[in-house]
Length: 106
Image (tube, rainbow, N blue to C red; front, side, top):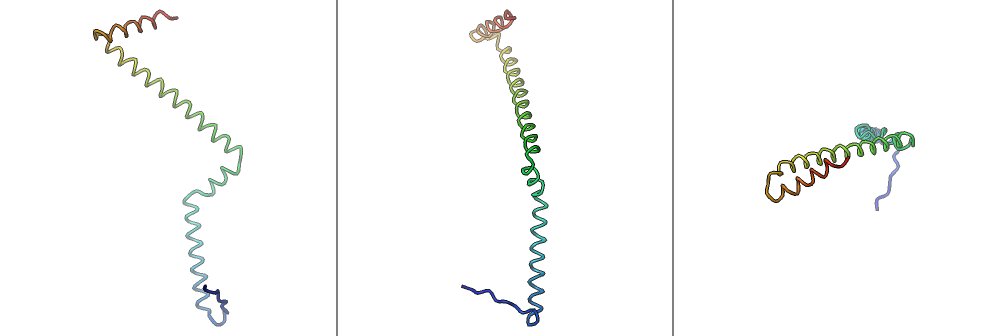
């Protein structure tokens, strides 16, 4: 196992300066990485419960609205496609009965 050596700044001034420069460059790299990853924004978001509740509420509202609109579009397309098959001999009778049933219901 390697033991850590203590440097006397008078004996090794160049090596200490080199180590300090190396550590400063590493700290700068870490700082840039944290800025790039928006770590500050993430911490602020999770530290503030009001912000977190609002964000989660908006996400849930968006998902619910998206699911509703998506379901409406898919069922509308499915209904339109089914109306194209009304003229088919066997399937058309069932679709015609279904359309009549829908039209008679208030």
